[in-house]
Length: 478
Image (cartoon, rainbow, N blue to C red; front, top):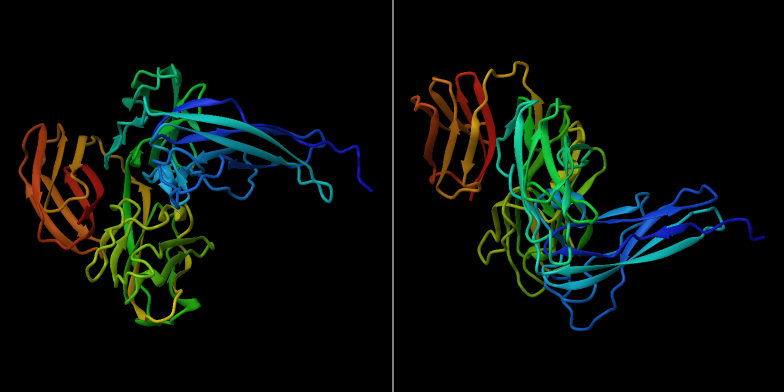
């Protein structure tokens, strides 16, 4: 019989808000259950269906849904789009898109109590108004490679207010948060309820990490921004190792959902901070293919998902390095159609903080008949970031490397009181030295252009040493 003593959970989707365009946000809900059942939460966009709308959704569409429904979660909050997407530098995925135009969006929060046999639910709604008179709200500092903060030092964080202190948004204050795990969580408060004026001096906490990120979030609203690069507190060094399989090449079976799996058994055991995949595939119709990387932990990332060409456009071959920090993928009408450093279809950073140890799998599936190909080779590049044993007495201040990615040349600049000469070395991902030059001491300011147009497109590791000062950076050549 039905138990009349059970209670439905409560649902609270929060207030209605006006938010800036082209800016991520967090839907913040709440629920309660008098019976003490474990609650789950599901956020869904419930705008009315419209005709003649773009599928997948577009940031410029003025109506209709631009966010998909996801499996219910134990968290009452949902980042829109997902936090890993924003941390990677993007505001959208295929089915999650931040509006860049004025519009409204209605969201429903469904709270379920999951009581065995007699579960109940409740729903509440919130409406967001996107204004094009404000935004995008972005962090404008700590956005280059190689930044190192000293513990206890004073540092300045800046952001573009972008009209969010007026225009119906009227956010007067913000919180500034720190992540020590590359943007997975933001648990350290650097400044609370500080004026939304675009700049704040903070005291660096007494902690150390090589994967620091910053978040500036609105007070009494739901939008936020994250800086675009990891940086360090303390002294850290990143090292990367390549791993290659045996038994290649392998033919890719035509129109076969099982596909092929090539494996690499990694014996090194460290916490991953970056993953890149070099991939060489010969195939006459790339739109047929899906390529995924599977970790020993079971995490699977579709790095290529039928995203080049179409059912009537036979783009051919892949010879590329998939890297989250690379430029967006270009599907050229050349052979190979996908080449050089390119951003994967889904984030390789999902592997961050997992162990490197164990059997890694690359899965290639051909989803249609009529065209064939083979997996020629692939390389798994994994990086770790470790604190150095001896902390340098000095640091390279105002360090900058630009542009990145570069085409033919890049500039290295920094300031230092060290009177030693400067040694610059560049390595490829195979660990081979491709450039080395010793520069005479130039005084307190170092600025040199490095001409390397003859290098092949790819990812390189830059090593800069001046006496007891050392910096390592990842560069992309396109």
